[in-house]
Amino acid sequence: MFKQAEDDSLVEKEPSPIQEIQEDGTLSETIVVPNPPQKIPTPKIRSSLKALTVDGIFAAPFYNVIGGALLSNFLLELGASPVEIGTIASIPLLTDLLQPVGAYLADRTTSRNWYSIFIFVPARLLWLILVLAIGLLTSSDISPHRLVQLTLAMSWVTNTMEALGRASWISWMAALVPQRLRGRYFGFRNSTISLTNLITVPLLGLAVSKWPGGTLEGYRALLVLGVVCGLVSQSCQFWMADVNPRLVLAVGSDPAQSESKGTKFAFLKEANFLKFVLYFGIWSFAVNVSAPFFNLYMLDNLDIDVSVVTIYGSLAAGANLLMQVVWGKLADRIGNRPLLVVMGALVAVIPLLWLGTGNDSISIWVWLPILHLLSGGLGAALDLCNNNLLMGVAPLRNQSSYFAIAAAVFGVSGATGIISGGFLATQASSGGLPLLFALSAGLRLVAILPLVFVQEKRSVPLGQLLGVLSQFRRQTALVSAEGISFEPVVPAEKDEE
Image (cartoon, rainbow, N blue to C red):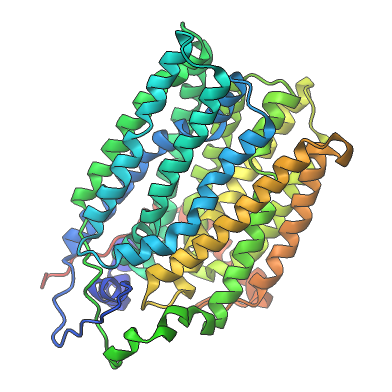
């Protein structure tokens, strides 16, 4: 009864999804539709959200194979330096500079789905070239250093291609997921991805370390599996409602305004959006100055086996899984900004806690697992709320362009942080990795300051946060005691539909 009542309430208050879809496009020519088309049927929204969830489940193994601890271990086996490992970690962020170009191109197509297929399918298939190259290494036809360079080149090419599609993909998700359900739905979707990571990451790490032909051959086999999963993920999009970005519903606006040059720089007049971008950029630098080097610290400095490192990753994924839905419900209740402020302050302390780790038994089996549980559980709130807050502060018109601008700032700042971190990590006289961890903690606290001034609709003032959290905790405890399940909510189907 509770869930049904909640569904009905959300449907009554939720604006027509097709209006969100139509206003998401960025056009050089605005098409005024005098009689708006009917909204997307509720069953189609339901099937789209289910397909979007399955897409994330199959995409997770692909990105786990081509990144994270598995890729770091592969490069270390080839003799890559910290600078090279830091460089490959910075590539996805540097290529985000192309997201505005991707938004421009995508908004001049007539299908989000086919644009996504055109971008992401070739980008994923290209990783098969690395599969062939690893085979040449085992036959001594290519040197390890040359394979490192090829891996860097592959990462540059594929991430450049994907950068052209990310803004369109986010706009597509923003159009399909009703605003009032975003916290709960994305919390649920992220939790399913975390569960997938929890299961697959340790299995993938164990497969690499125990592969009969060696770790390189093991990684080669996993690359093939990862590409297959990536293609299955892409096929799920055919079950999602397609969106034509060229359909723009211009209500009470002058179509000629979209032709003006000032529209291209309209984001400079959005003070609230600029405050968020300032926070986003500083936070990206602060996190990425140290984030890529935690795995390096464990694999190299502490000499921990890759299978154990992937188990740590699974612990983080498990904590992420458990907390995603909680943070999603809480974000819908109090807003994303206050949750980001509190969780950001807590996450800022975590790099300092790494300074007390070592290769002793207590660190390996107690301290490091606790740190990964904290990172996964608290980081779940940041991942969820950052995306939702960006969707909230970006104006509905030309939304994909705002997403692209934020991603570009995030990417440049993050890449600068990774490169700076990689340089400092090689300078033993400057303190090496411990200095990076301390520097990252201080910068994270600084990044939170601009976030305090960001305005968000339906956000609880920070001064009232404790009272609302106390009330939310009592209600959650009551619901749990009564055995009522908070399942992810999608709009309920009305009789007239």
